[in-house]
Amino acid sequence: MTNNVTDNSRRRFIKLTAIGLAAAPFANALLSGTATAAEPIAETDPLAAAMKYKADAAQSTDRKDATAHCANCALYTGAAGDATGPCTIFQNKLVTANGWCTAWAKKAA
Image (cartoon, rainbow, N blue to C red; front, side, top):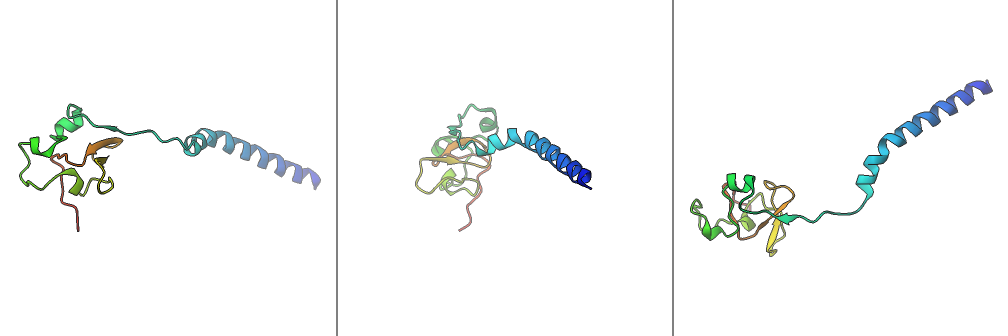
């Protein structure tokens, strides 16, 4: 009977070791605690150009609503009052609060 207990302990150890080794790279990435700083998106970026993004909404010839800008867009996730903030369209990039692109959608009140 002790032989069976030894086999179970050995199997359990091997399973846990294999799981630990497989999870180690992911744990390092999740627990590193270092955040990468987002950089502003350039108007020449291929996605920004396709979305006709302008850092200054007044410079856009395609904007129909004079009050439309990134800060009042539903896709803008920056804090109120910040000069720049993240946008769900331009992931890992910042847009200016006074910017505009064709994806602009009025933020719900």
